[in-house]
Structures are given as structure tokens and as C-alpha cells.
Image 1: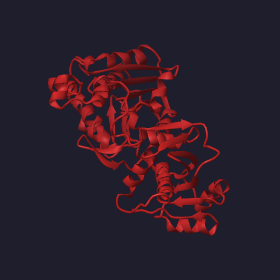
Image 2: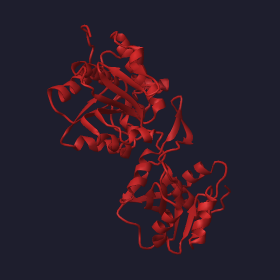
Image 3: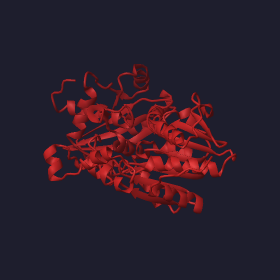
Image 4: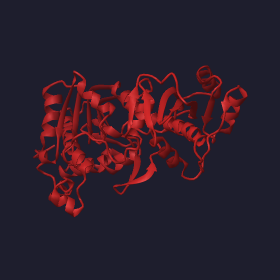
Length: 396
């Protein structure tokens, strides 16, 4: 590589200090939009690969979906290498999503491909847009990474497992905004500044407090796309209540089977996770929930008649969930009409509530929920629709 003039931001210096001058295990880049996080990480990995040329390092670059990675990280990666005159088509195995850089292997990976994630070893791991990533899957990659890990994200929620990383003794965090990136195009800068809730921006109709807080100031906030914003975590369910049923959503290989205890008490709903696991046969499900459910009603997914018949034959009181057009949003609205309390031991359900959002299309929030982080929530929805139907005249 001939001499290259790098135009870098403080993000690059942060990474260089952590992983060249020091032996930091985890680097965290948190901040607003266009603060130079992604560009700086790619620049750093380029320099690191050159400094360690021929060493056979494995670097995994991952984010939630491979399709998202192909639309974001990969074009930036190629653009930077082209800018420096070092991109070679011959070095890129498109079918395997692997690029050979100075005798080191860079693997581009979507966290939605469980077969590739499990068992994937690396020297360096970069989780892009970590807010969208599943904690358990990331942990699989972390424990197989020998040298160091980089996380980056826009803090588009107020609570998330990734925020706990900064509490580690072996981690360092840098928070940046667009003001820390002198190379941001003027039009992009103007767009982000237009979110600031100034009188002028309010008059123009561009002001957006959430967008400004997260993407302008780089501060943590709950987004407009989050479906369940109002709930709290309690130690246990109450001893006395109005009604109780159990919701059940089936899964197997990739999706978990989830059983949630749902208690209705006046305007309050209490949710308690009973089962949340993959790879369960019908007999396993029965053995897991029967001692808890006993003679109470279970509302399972009606799309699994064979499984429902098995549990019914074994003695459980099964009433399949009613479904119909718009039943998902109808059930969500019913849930949001009550005060929701989730028990502290319901760790998987809490994770779903934090990450269950509406789909965005062309930057606009739709009324269609994502088909993810919803297995326990679906179980809750089946049960609540049943419970409230007994008190209200509901047409589904």
C-alpha cells in the first residue's frame, strides 16, 4: 500500500488508541447520525489489516440482517477501498461474503443466519447498529472472538442490553454527534439540523424531538416506532385478581415456544413468563406447562391444530385463539389499553417488549409490527383477546 492521506474523525483516534496503543477488549461508538462512526471503523480496520498483513486474521463484520448489511456497510467498505485505490474484485468472494485484505479475512455476516453465526470464530468482531441485534446471538460471536470487539449504534431506545457493555471494566465508550464530523456533506448536515425543535423548524414543519435527540444530539430516547412504551417490571404477580389464563405460541427450530401467564385485575394486566425455549416437542411443552397451568385455560395459536389436539388429549383446557383480519393490531391495541406489568424473571418477554417495533417504510412508521421479537407477545395477545372478549363485545 502506497502512502495514503486519511481524513479521520475522533472515532478513528479512539479505536487506534484502544486497540493499537492499548489492549482494550470492547470499544463502543454511540452517537448521532453521520458522526463518522461507520466510516472511521472501516478506516481503522483497513489500517489494522495493513499493519498485520499476512497474519491470517479473521474479522467478522455483522449486523441484524444480511440484506441490511449489503445495503449499508458493504457499499461503504467498497467505496473507501476504491477511494484509496486498493479494492480488488478478485479479492471478494461474493457467494461467501468474504474479502481478503492484506492476507486477512473479512467476513460479512447477517445475524439472521443462525447456521453461520454459531461456531463462527474471529480475531476481531464488529457489530454494526447493535441496537437492532439479538443479545444471545451476539454473545455467541463474542465468546468466539479472541482479540477485540467494536459496537456502534444510534441510541434509538432508552433501555437496551447493549448499554450494559459500558459498565464492563474492559470496555471504553465514545459518544459523538454530527458536530464531531468535519467531513459531513452540507446538505446532510442541514437535514439533521432541521430536526432541532427551534421556532423556525417548527414553523417549517421539520422539527422532530425524537429525531433530534437521537440522530442530532446522540442521546438515548424511545422512538415513535416502539409499540409498547408504557409498562413496568414487578417482582411478582398479585395473590388476588379477577381472571387468569395462559397464552401459548408455538415454535421449534429457530423460533421459541412461549407460554405466558396472563392475569387481568381491573385495568391492570400482569404478565409472567412460564416457558420460552426452542426445540420442544409437544410432549415437552405439556410436561413444562402442565404443572403450572393445572386446570386453568390455555389459549394457543389456532394455526397449530395438531399440537392443540395433543395438549387437549393430555388433559389441558385448550381454547384456540381467534384470528382474523387485523387481529394482530386489534390485540395490540387491547394490550395497550391496560396498564401492563411484567415480572422481573420474564427476561425474554422484557427483551421482546423493548425491541418490538412498527415497520418503517421509506422512513415513515407504518401500523404493521415487525415479525420478530413477538413470540411471547403473541402468546400474551392470544390470552388478552380471550380475557377481554368475556367482558366486552368484540368482533374479530
